[in-house]
Image 1 (tube, helix red, strand yellow):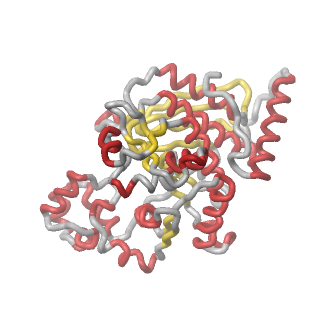
Image 2 (image 1 turned 45 degrees about the vertical axis):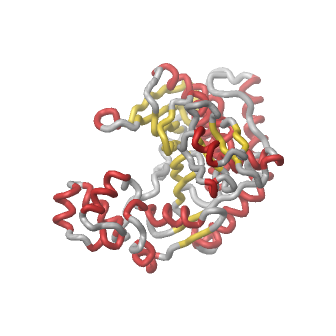
Image 3 (image 1 turned 90 degrees about the horizontal axis):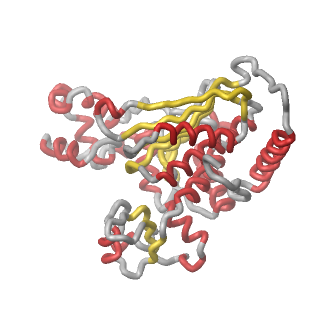
Length: 380
């Protein structure tokens, strides 16, 4: 998504259209969450101290972030993605990988999928999205950055090496300033130079990571899109660009993930019993491991608020104080995987909930994401 938070604010408030907008907190320690394309020529960037951003662009409109609102819209965007492939791997609120290999013939090729996906998001959500495509994750991600704003760049497999060779090594995911400096000290400035560098010497300098890094530089990206392939579970997760300890944002992500999972369950006629929350800290070492907590319900469900309340309760019980890099929700123990135990009593409330969900699904199917929103937050 293009300048996602700022674009949402400009869409929702006509007064901001065409003006420089900075999303963030205006205090002395505030940080820029997003900057509109009108603010970027002044040098304003994400993660910049707000004091510096206001000095660079004093005429900008400062808008306080509405994280729960952005999370709801992100869930609507992912619903559009699922029209074109079930293999969707969210990276953050505003970015995701899609594996469309199995959808190419159905929709007429990658260019047709990109055009239809962008048109759907534009017409239904009034937002711009840039699409990058290629034979692997690395090329797709780089291409999407070069397609901004509001564009498409598709790299065919036969053109992959020519596309990668002249690019700086920092374009490779995971190559930060320290690694870039180390590569520069070896005379490696471009991806092409990295691809041709002596394998043995690179391994001595970088250790076990050298082989993976060099394979990516040569266009050998074997990483797959991590989605629910086996259908023994349904899950949604995202990795934040920066560590997050904002309780409102985490609650919003839990709700958005839960609603998306529930809609997918209902679309495929499934229900699940066991609800899990998972998270990962950004620290190295033992703290890098994935933490999970789960609870099994007496009766299987396909209801978003039910999933969200359970997942949020599991999260709050852990009382996590350390910032997280990843947060996700998953439902397993599906009614198709093992016989479901029917409840002895079915209350009128259950019937009303089922009718409401059916109506919501019908509205979303007919009019697209964003036409209706469910009230309430995790914990109710």
